[in-house]
Image: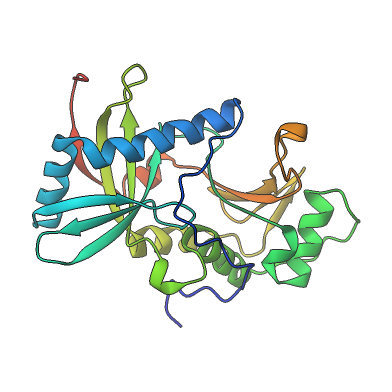
Length: 244
């Protein structure tokens, strides 16, 4: 089976490419706003474009932002080819980026949904043992989606100037490299911990939360901790010492 082929199914993701409404103000929504802004900067900063042309060794015709898919941007090259990237903006460490949210039953695996309901939603007491094979499938589904044609080809990581929003550093990693690393770290079985289910040192599932401010606080979200070990997988493409 292909490394990136997810087994678990899920509810179909919307296909709309409309601009997403920004959520109400909170720490999580600020991270989302920063990420949304970074996508725009990737598409318009000439120095970022030039650095990507060097990395791919191809002139870039343009960028196209996409929403409600697992990739954020389509990069269109002058020779007619294209590739896709999913970008994460911010520093290293912390509690992690939210990379997916869905209804608990959308995991389509009864033991896993039982464990999530018990730990995350406080609905029941059973704690089934979930193998590393399921953990790898969940990582694939939540990081890449369920449609292989729509997998992001690359992941990028940007750091932005807090005042101007301009990108001051960028690095890139092929999806296969990142996923292989995440697979290599999964625990032999998922680890229940308080109200979370940990798949590895860097990946865990939790209740979305947000109370009345969130339209579906009982959704389950995956968090991805972007640590120094992950950062080492990425090739730096662009750095500037001061924002312009």
